[in-house]
Length: 327
Image (cartoon, rainbow, N blue to C red; front, side, top):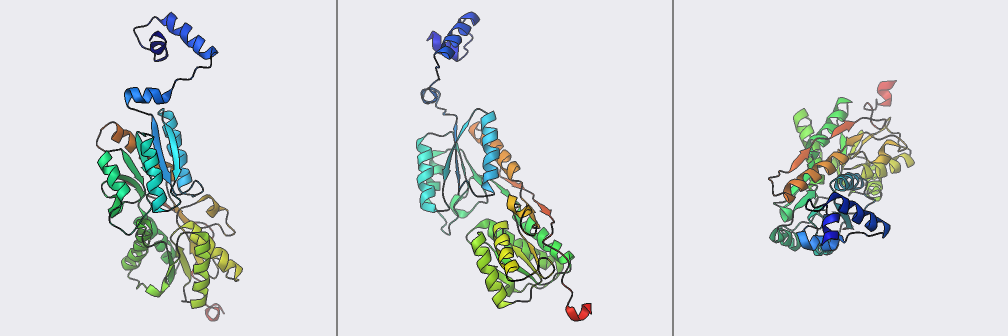
């Protein structure tokens, strides 16, 4: 009991006794059993984090911020990967729950269904949960942090309008993902606000990966819709598309302007540095931790929607001048 009190710095023990016991503990290499402490006070000081993969260029930065703040607050972060699969997400969340984490951060795997058993169970358990990303019907009711994707996407389209572009192709993301729908909505709003008719033939399903962006670019070349600019749902799609277009002899931005969304690290160092939207990744992680602290403390917390900034680089330029006009 005396040793326990000394290591927990209890006030009812003499300071000299505490010093002697701690010195002996250090000599013996003693490490307190965190699990035993958790059983006693019903707090494990563990937080779970579920993201698609550590290689994801957006969530890797959010994870960095979360781990840094968790460390400062005396928490350890348990990392799990959903790999974008609903079945795996269910398994890893249940494993983290079995570890009795004090709270859970989840980047949801979006699905079309309005309910999901694992989220129903999380509601029943009352475990503090902060979603990293947009809400959806199946995960309704949980606190979340997200980027204002509508406004950010709208700013990209406006930028292209200001450069003189009127036919802008849009490479859309997965239609079951709220972020993809919001970015498409921003593109539509910019057209509506500018009074410029939107041609649905300029919208291509492009997914979310470099490979899918390259595939959509080849379809774009084949269909030749007469666009002078291309706006992609994220940077990976934009980079895949731009690489395929460059390999086909398209000059960026002289022949075609290209813009992305996300400001992943490679976007700045691509063959043609990419105009994009700078998502506040570190800030998203910091705000998520602030919300988690409130939930754990039983305090009221509200979801947060953060602004993002347009970053203009070399991949966008004025609308091409037709050869006859130039002569």
